[in-house]
Image (cartoon, rainbow, N blue to C red):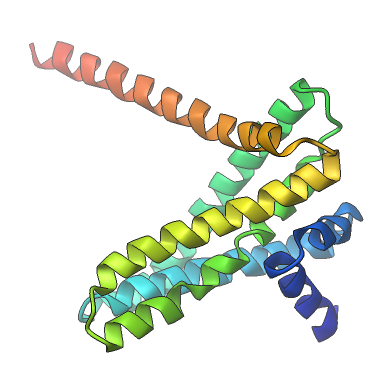
Length: 195
């Protein structure tokens, strides 16, 4: 893999999601390597952006090493679970979804999240509400990432835009409902144990 191919991934993710979809459609193991590198960079940039918001103590070194490893593994685990749920939902919907393709799309669509550090750095240096702009920029970059993933999946499986939004939202809704029910059941068990 050369520099031109890596720049092609970045350009396609930021500017032309349909081209990214065509690149990833060729099943190849190098896509997983690039996806893992993108996830690692996103996690690192998020740690740096959060660290810019406060004064640093000795804990920063733990956060940048052990915290990075833990957050990277957690991010990859969440990505795999979400991709698995999305693949199953797409297959139930009658599409020939591939888990590897969905994982690569979801990972590579996170490329815009790297821009969180420049946003935080600009507003931190201006002393103008850096925490607010960290939150607002995180939300905006997350929506941009969802848009890239939606365009890739829509182009690959020839799904209408509204259906694609529904398919992408459904695993998050299912996970949220499941987490809520587990929380309620756990609370009821704790209350029963206390009495």
